[in-house]
Length: 96
Image 1 (cartoon, helix red, strand yellow):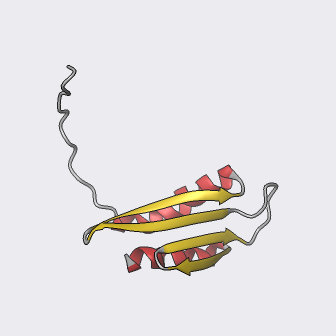
Image 2 (cartoon, rainbow, N blue to C red):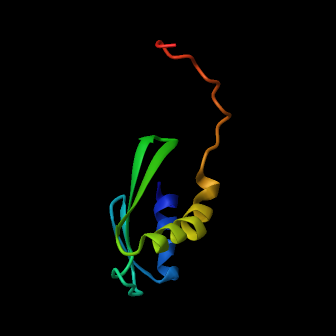
């Protein structure tokens, strides 16, 4: 989990002020836009020792700028932490 939080803190290089409390990280953009600075909240949840979930959400700012940050910075920076599984075959439901 520490690796994930450290990756999120790297955002300060990308014009974000970073605040951290336990497993929560708040990223606040230092650039002003029409809708104010982009503010992003991220929280890390440990489901099992080897499985964590990172919840990232925009709290304020421009949606396009948020999506651009996620696609260009956040996802590539965490790609090596993602576990890919083989596709699961379709299992028929009880209603079929």
